[in-house]
Length: 292
Image (cartoon, rainbow, N blue to C red):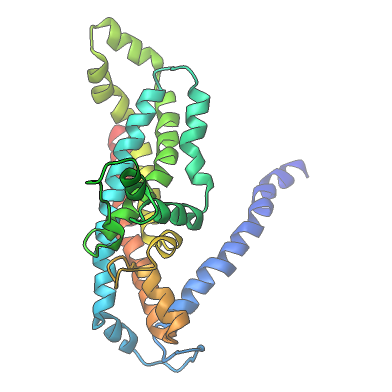
């Protein structure tokens, strides 16, 4: 009886979460995929129309602009967050004083909702209210920061806000990885006369490679699904200069009554995630096999 209980206990514990995932994730993904092949507008319609919604999506210039904006948002967001987060983690790993307080300060932005963070940064970057205005009041007449109203630079204001909010979380991930490195190996390298930069480059950073994989995965996922931050800061503007695929999907599905196109754009975002996730998982699994 005890053996039977031990055998089925994991399945019983996991069953509710598996059932919830099937119902609230995969079934809705399947339903959304089907709607992308229908003539749904304000309300769902279930007559099959083939690839018509995808043709309309690919002929839509705003969609391609949102994809380009996603690249200009995601690339610097992921690179800067990773570099700054790793740098902060390495500094915290030096057993400095007030490490706990600094970690709390770095992690605090993540506790804020994207709406709050976006609104705060919208005020800070507003030329008539924010940092530029304060600098002018202090007598620095040449100070000017109007990127938020510049269509060619507004997307980078969103990058700054996103980096500010996520860097502390990235640093926490890297710090956990750094604390997991075997200290005996590091001490052996120090005895052999290796410098600290060489130890980090040849021993520590290769050891925490799985953390890099996790960071890339999380940041890519966050970049693709970013919505609240952009709505709070720019609402997709000026014009459509900061519109992202998530905003395009919401606008067409729930504001313009084009649910079919909205569903098609959601499926394309899912395809983006899969296109990035699968190669990353393959490279990581191959590296793990080679290291074994």
